[in-house]
Image 1 (cartoon, rainbow, N blue to C red):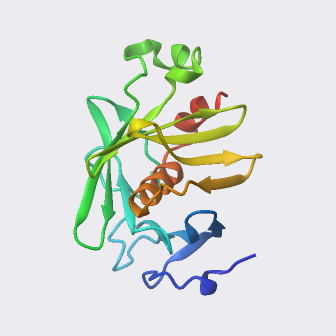
Image 2 (spheres, rainbow, N blue to C red):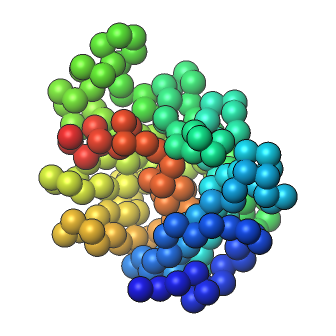
Length: 191
């Protein structure tokens, strides 16, 4: 098992590490949180995602800072998406996360599970578009525009980024998968 000291990926002081792992195609990754009141996390704290193959990235609820109590984000509708920010080396790369294929209104929850292929999450950032969708029984597959496979899960717990995935791909995918709640994630997995 890897520890946070094995990584040293520019973590802010006071970060509480929840996960530290090695991911094929992305290298060593560490995830955690900055507690409420941390000078680097603000009054409400925030999630932290760092590593060899990832740029620092954050996701926000619609027009709200992520709080300690509400640190997972519903992707939102096409008209009211969640926001993401990837802190690239030259400038910040803002983006949006939504589920445009879901029906609106009171039928959303009951209709969403009828077709697994309709349960997709769309991410748009840096002039790119990604789609997260179910793959086989319990897998997840991420496809970038023009049909480029970026990420998939294999054999239950094995996760792999493709050779075509760059740092923006890795940052956006890990941030999104780590930030969306089970209420959004379960339909993608076919539950």
